[in-house]
Image (cartoon, rainbow, N blue to C red; front, side, top):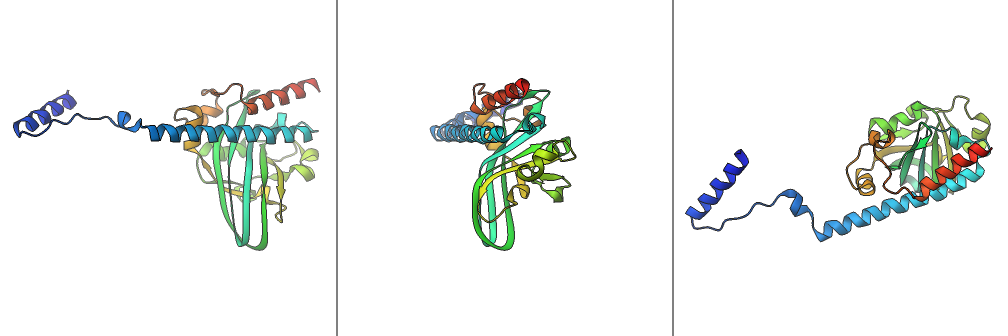
Length: 244
């Protein structure tokens, strides 16, 4: 009643002064502009492209997975297009998706951004795809707890390299197994990723509403694209592990 009274009083005052009566516009109605709609559509397109690219990375990993590491993982974090360049000072970045194994069912993607600044003497350029298999709850904790966390030894994680020891050491104390398909002078870049942030904009665009990480991890929010290529890859992976 207080809100209605204020509007009537304001209108009456405007009439008494001979001025125009201005209708109130709610924030929701003013936000629905063609420009905003176009931006939302573009963000949704970008999010879906990231999912499609992540599916291609997962397919490549699945073909190399002789030990069945993927099906044993509690979650998989895939960054399809990771870029790094430096000459004395290097920067790194990319967008990735985390998919959680929730009781045998793989959840929809949760979007994160990564970025770091590293000072060194190396000169080189590296770009490609990286992925992390979370083998323990400790590996997933950073994704659940908040922003600006790292996946490296400084974060107290035991990380091994998929290509060197991951296949032989599966289930032997590793929190994270790092996979990389990169080119350049940085042979160990995949196990030194810092400054990981929840991408609220990408998650909102993909799910068409505001969501939290735990909403996705628990399965309370369903993937709006049930036929997405990433979901298809996980289904193929599970089917392959059952047939072995």
